[in-house]
Length: 173
Image 1 (cartoon, one colour):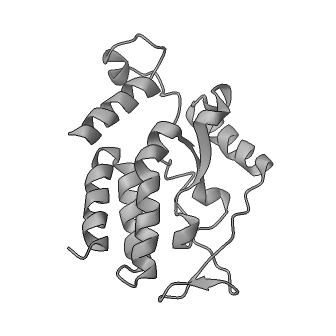
Image 2 (image 1 turned 45 degrees about the vertical axis):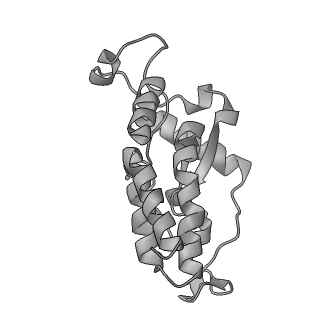
Image 3 (image 1 turned 30 degrees about the vertical axis):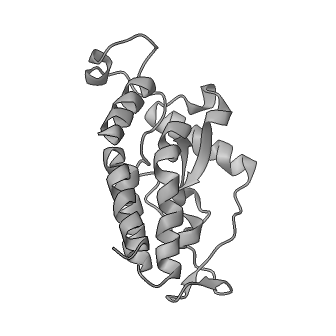
């Protein structure tokens, strides 16, 4: 119930000027920022490092290495290609997110980066750590963790339910 409410709040805050009603969601107005990664721009990408490996599965791990210029480029691409206005908004409200988290073996390539608003990452960031803990414990394979995270990032209304399931797995239920 809480996630559905938060999702509705996200939809209203992301669309059009303040004060407009639900009709904005049905209009041709573009949201101000993406609620999810755009598949064509951000399909996700995994690390191919031969040096660093993690977890029982021994997945390649890339250290964080995203320059400010690359972050600006990602924001500019999303704004230009899809009509978002991230570049015009308060930068402190955004991070350039790794669609597939680094802890899960995600890469620093542009194909794995997208501008994520605070209201979105507050829902999805807790999942990343839990999924990586499950991978570290050998309770989840990388492919399953990636699929779960992508599902949650593309179905925000389900993020809390996914988190509850991960909590159960971590607690041995």
